[in-house]
Length: 345
Image 1 (cartoon, rainbow, N blue to C red):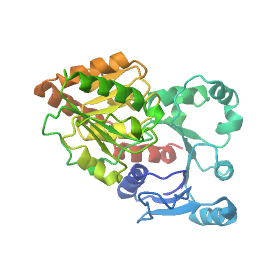
Image 2 (image 1 turned 30 degrees about the vertical axis):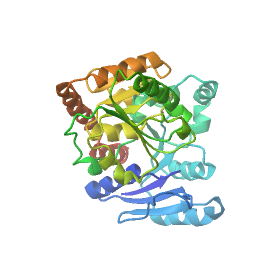
Image 3 (image 1 turned 135 degrees about the horizontal axis):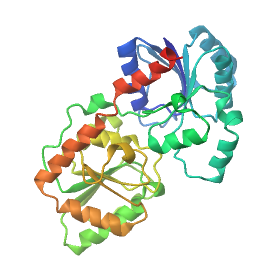
């Protein structure tokens, strides 16, 4: 089967999903993606079964010609903002080719979302056949947009499980590790404030490791127990998550968060917020970590204290539970979902 993917910024984990599908089902992919920046820290290139092309709006005729020669049996379109992508989707849908759109927005009930719900056929549904979402927070929005349950796929995002196969936690390290951009919506300001206060009290002995770069780096506490590692190649993340303690993602809003799946695959107990989409699937209170309301600094303080005082047996139990939950989202399931569209069509 030939699958056309009309993407924005192509990621390593999406490549891993397509690679697994090629391996299992011998499908071929033609991928158009937004041209990466010259300063991009890592490169994603074509490989057997996956041909990658940079999208440029001034070459629409060339793109259309290559797609016609490719003869797609299925089309995946990331969102619905690129007008050329929508034009392609509409043309092939009218010829009986199934079209899937991806969506990771949670239903927040905003005016923009309510308008999208009212005019969903004109804005979205006339171009696509199916919608693919990561999990429950997005499923509700998909229903609001008028998609029937049989036209909604789940499990859109999956971490590259292959690079975490050998990662385990063998030491109980009293450390919290954050991986992501150091920006406001990640909730880092609250995290840094709480950690700084606890460390200065000298009542709790633990460490914080911040991995990532961003405009709020200057707020990272200046303390011997706090380490900052700027942006690193994604392939180095498994090593950094080995014996790393407890993963923490304090986001004020996180549509999904593939990094949560990566942390679970690594067997890290976790702390995140009710506002983090991936936590709905990968974090169960008391089972493999704790959730709290993103703006509640007192709740975050209580959770950190509880985990700092956690005994070794409880830590490793949570570690094993994270790996168990992580296994429910996997590359094989992702491949099964994308192939089910054509089989069931």
